[in-house]
Amino acid sequence: MDSFKVFYSFHYEDVGNFKANIIRNSSRLKCYHGLLTDHSIWEEFKAKNDKQIKQRIDTSELKNSDATIVLIGQNTHERKWVKYEIIKSFEAGNTLIGVHINRIKGKEGITRKGLSPFDRLGFKYDEEQDILKFYELIDRKWQVFKDLPYVENHKRNTVFVRPTNVFQRLFGKEKGGNFYKLSDYFPEYTWKLGEHNAETLFDWVNESHE
Image 1 (cartoon, helix red, strand yellow):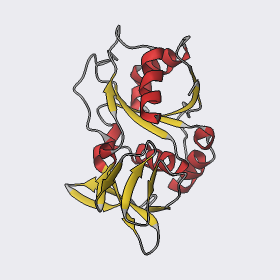
Image 2 (image 1 turned 180 degrees about the vertical axis):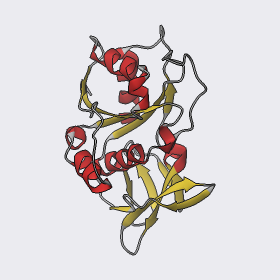
Image 3 (image 1 turned 45 degrees about the vertical axis):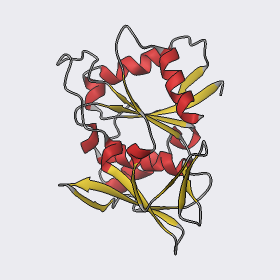
Image 4 (image 1 turned 90 degrees about the horizontal axis):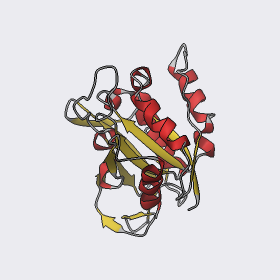
């Protein structure tokens, strides 16, 4: 593709320590490989309840994006709204990648790599209802993701499950099985200052899309 409308999913503490901003500003630079346009929620939404937060995400530019980049810091895996945005991106059919930002010097300098939310989210296919049920890893146990427990099984989803119970990625690779972590499907990268730029980011998204 020549361009992607990108939704960034992140923990707001990584905006405060400037790490997420580095990626955002890099994507604004001229990229000869293609164009990345930002469709994200950069201002933290001060909601009174979960319903309002869900409504804010559901009506955000996420629905008009075609790629989601999860910026993975030290505590990103703990933020349930990152998980919610990932599953909504899945439902929307977005290309999904993760980018670790621990190598970017923020207020606390370079930090250890954070746990991946892709490793802590999984799904399985319910053939009788033709839905994908989502789970999150809590205290080493897979539990139903209560904020979005399932999505309809549609070809427009990022992952479509054939009625034969065979999983098929957008690029056609097939894998059998009953339960999958999202890390089985979506790649992750580590951003390195001085090495990576807007073209790198575009290439990562484009490779996953293909």
